[in-house]
Structure formats: C-alpha cells, structure tokens
Picture 1 (cartoon, rainbow, N blue to C red):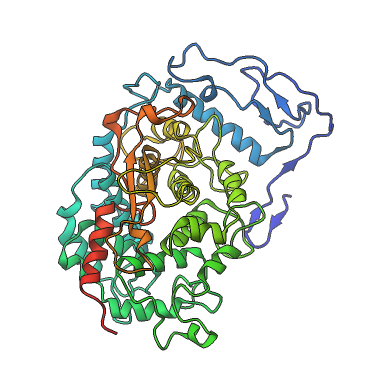
Picture 2: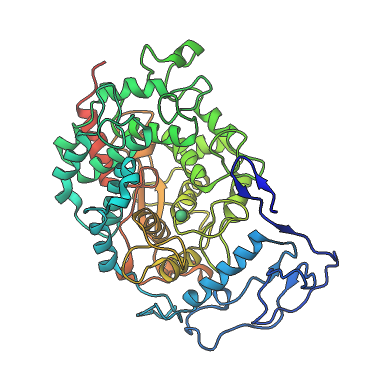
Length: 508
Ligand SMILES: [Zn+2]
C-alpha cells in the first residue's frame, strides 16, 4: 500500500537512493537514458558523458548543446529526475528539427519559423464560443480576454476592433462596491481587475479608459492593504505578491491616489499609503535560495518572482528599489538556475520541468534585473550594459522549436495541448528575448512615484550586437512587438491609459 499524504490525498512520491555511493563516472551512450531507475541499475553519480551524441539526422544549424543529454547528472534517482529525463527525451527531436510534426521551414540555425497566422487564428478563436465543459472557467473570463488580446498585440494585430465587446464584457463585471469579479455578480478580485484594466488599456479610447469607477476601485483596494505592507487578493482572501502586483498595476495605470482611503484598516497600524511597508514585505519574500516566494516563508517560484520584481519597479527606479530590497547576486543565481540545457526553456521552481509560460514569468524578470544593474539610461542613447544575463538563444529555440503546436497556439511543452495562457506568455517571453529594455529619466507621467514605471524604452536586439555565444536565432520576420516589462501590454497602451487618467484625476 502506498503511503498517502493526508492533506493532498495523493500517494507519496517514491524517492530512490543509490545503494552504492561511489562516484565513479561512467560514459553515457546514446541509448542509456540518464537517471531512469529500474531498481537494478548500478549507481552513476555524478554521471559524465564522454561520447559525442551529435545526431547526423539533426539540422546542421543546431549546436551540440541542444542535441545532447546534460553532461553532468546527479546519481540520486527520483520520480522527479525520471520526469526530467523523459522531458529532455521529448524535447530533443523538436530541438534537432527532426520531429515528424514539424513542417518547417527551418532557418539556417535549424529553428522553425513562427507560425504567426496559425497563432493569430488560434487567439481569435479563443475569443469565441466555448463548449459547455468550460463553464468551470467562467471566473477566468477576464484572463481569457487579456491573454488573447495581449498575444494578438505581440503578433502585430490591431485589437481596437474588440473595443465595444471588451467594454460590454467588463461593464457587467464591475461591482458597485468597487473592483471587478470574474463575471456578473461575482466577488471582486484583484486578478480580475488587473486583467480587465490591461484589456481596456489595449483596446484604448475614452469610453474604455472611463469605464472603471476609479473612486470605488480606490476604496475597494484600500480594503486589501494589510498591516504588514502586503495586499490580499480579495476581501477575506489570501495575502501574497499577486495581490501586491495586481493592485499596484491598477493604481499606476488608473493613476489612483497613492494615499490609503480614510477608512482603510491598515491606517490603524500606521500605514498611510499603498506603498507603505511594501518594499519590506517583498524583501521578506526572498528565500534562502535567492528566488522569491508568494508570501514570506514559502517556496521560491518564477511567477511570484516576476510579480515581486515588477512591483518594486513600479515603485521607483529598479537600481534603487530592487537593489535596496533584494539580495541581487543571490537572485541572479536562482534565476540562472531556472534555465535548462538542452531544453533552453525555464522552469518555475527548483527541480521542476521546463514550461513555456515561464518564458514570461522567469524570462521577464531578466530585463528588470538587467535594468537594476545598468541603472538609468539616456532615452536616445543607452550606454554600456552588463549584457545578456541568460541565453536568449536557448529560450528562442525552446519556444519556436518545442512550444508551437501543429495547428496554432503555443504550449507548455511537447505532448501538451496549447491554450491561450501559454500562447500569451510564451510569446511575451519571445518578445522579451528579442528586445533590450531599459529605464530612463524621460516619462510621460507627472506622478513622481510612477514616473520611472512609465520611463521604459526598448531597442530591438540585432544579430551584430549579440555575443557570438548568444546569437539571434530567429528570422527578422518573426520579431514580435515589444511589450512593457512591468505592465505586459504594449508600451503605448500603458502610457495612453495613464496619461488620460492623469488628465481626468479622481476627486476624493
Ligand atoms: Zn505553464
């Protein structure tokens, strides 16, 4: 009988230890999968590969790094390491450009082109009718709208054609007590509000910008602010960095007063603004690994890392706010460990598998950290930079090689179905890898607190400026639109909404 973990109701995962702790290195052959335990295999810790596994069938433009199993492998064989090995085996044919589902064409680097038309079609479809089985996703409707619109923007589509539909959809989700739920009559939640505000910014126009009752939103957000500086995600809900990031994005884009409403409970604990105690709260979320968790004391996770870093970058210049609140070298170490070879993609946590959506959650941490190290740049002439902090090439190969589904849409990894969430966030990651983002002193915002958040500029990364070790491996026709590194919508959409709101201040 397997041991059942009471809380989860699931059988405990099997962990196998080698019976012999010698560290003899043995050669890996092409057919010997690493770490696959049968219970009788001899221990092999750490395992080093000697023979080249260069596949003569592979596309000639694919370097050996993306064709081979890892050179060093931990001998400890667990269910986790087995899954990791299986994932690598699944990815390798796609990385080599030899999987039967890959129709091509491939460029000189052995990378398939971006199936733009198929992905555009997939995202348009995702805004249409859903079968009855999707009723359980009802509360995620704001997200479905956001993922589709953000993905279409990245692919260069004009989403203003959806303006009326978006306004009609979200006007029914707004509650008179402030905030938006996932649907009509549903409890207000900061994630619904975040997706709604970003969607309204993307479709643009005065009617969209004026849809949100900003006074009610400000009062409702005041109820989420906690005495320790963090935010709940909804009234009575959990407190974590999602609550902080989503709330601060809403406050910044809608130019809501930074002061807490007079009746906010947090005022009784000495807090005066939405930013009060927030950097300190986010700092407490950095773990011993260097990554950032959802709340103090939890496990570091890629999506929470992005939420926390983006939140700090909303509050001021990254070189000031991130440096002050985070152990940057430790964070760099943890983030670097999220990128795997040969897959090239990112995992969200230690000992987890690569997943396309972390192309954004982890991938979009990089411009924020790079800007932390580079400091303020001149808008017209960005100066020297620390350079690439991760392998843009690896990420590009993973997204274009492993994440594109045959009939449109992008996915977590080979073997998984595409969905609009993974389509949006793999494309965001690809766009991030294709552009250099930096913060400047030039901002359309007259709000001192948020001036830096709206000062971000970008330049396309060209083949010539990249080190040979991290070359561009995508074709120019596959370059996506740049996305704002904090708001994750086009720069112009974020600026237009903020500027309009500044011109129409909330009277409180
Ligand atoms: Zn995912």
